[in-house]
Each structure stands twice: as C-alpha cells, then as structure tokens.
Image (cartoon, rainbow, N blue to C red; front, top):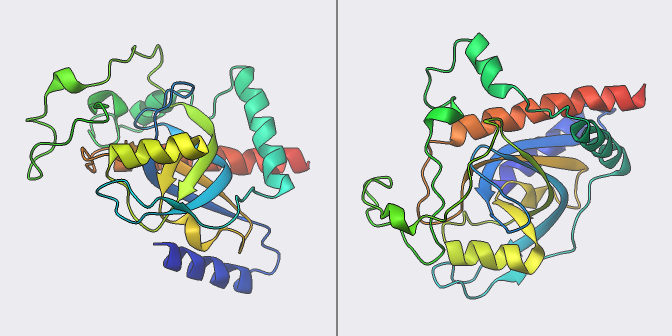
Length: 241
C-alpha cells in the first residue's frame, strides 16, 4: 500500500544520494471517458496526481479531496514531452509489444497475451452477478459497445491519476472521480509519495474499477507499464545528452 511505497522511497533516497526521482510502476483501474478510450492493458502516465478519500464506497457518498494536486518535476515533464513528440511521429513506446512477446515465446501464455484476454466494459449501473465466478453469468447485452481498435498494441494516455487508500470496485464512484477531476485512472500506491518525493506514476490498466473486477489482466498490464518505464529511462538519457 501507500505506506510501504513511502518507506521504500525514503530508504532509497537515504541510500542513494544522487537519486533525482522515482518511477512508480504499478497497476490500477481505468476510468473510460468520452475523450479517452481507455481499455484493459493500456498505460496511463500521471502528468498530475490528485488524492481522494471515500466515506461510504458502496453508496458513492463522501468523496473528498485531500491535499493539493501534484505534478512531477520539470526534468520528468521534459522527457514526457519528448516521448509524446516521438509518438506523434509514429514511434509509440508500446508499438509491436505483441510481436516482442511472440519472439520470446510468450504468446501462448494467456496472461501475457492481450489478444487472448477478454476486455468487457459493462454499463455503470450493471453490477457483477456472482462473486464466486468471473463474468461467466453476466449479461453481455449490458456491455458498453465500443469499436474495435486497428492495432493490438496497448495505448498510452497522459493525464490525471487519482490516488486513494481504498481499492475502487464501484462504477458509480469511479465515474464520480473521473467527472470531478477528469481523472483517467485510480490507484492506491502513490498517496504516500505525493508532495514528499519527486516521482512519476506509470499505471497499467488491469480493471475498470467496477464490481466486475478480476486479476486476469494484471500481468499483462504490469508488463505494459514496465515496457513504458524502460522507454522513459532511455528517453531521459537521450534528453540529457
């Protein structure tokens, strides 16, 4: 949780005197929005972090903001701008991820192959039916209709990540956070770092933060986030040179 992340950060800055910033590479819940077609396996990069706290998560009441928004330091933002420019020129950090998996013989692993994992976004008011199973009994007619993507590669989204102490598993609460802050993602690790350490959050999307939560996308989402983190570090060196 956020406490352990803060402890690790404190120990790292204590041990490595020249450490400039941290990368928080993690998984979280996506907040699909009309202007951001976020899907499972995508990556959200936190250009801004906000903190929230929930009163009654089951009802959606008591959503509170805690603290001021956080932006990563200038050197991180400069590197992000350089990566975005490259992406506009067709050099997506996650381009060809499926091909890379195939070369490494990992496409037969259903947890690492996004093409073999099902991505269902259900309507906000349709709750999961059977907690003992995944979505086998859920009504597929209640899914949000989305057009197929031309590429199987995960997409990268830059924007606001909302951090709080509770794991969100309620679509109404998720959308409330999204509408209130224009947030693209919710997670629980960054709260202990905000305004205490310089960092960048890189979040692989493994759920839609609703009642249909399961862990099937966790490994793929973590891999996509780690792939972006590697590209960020390489780009950081390039910008400095």
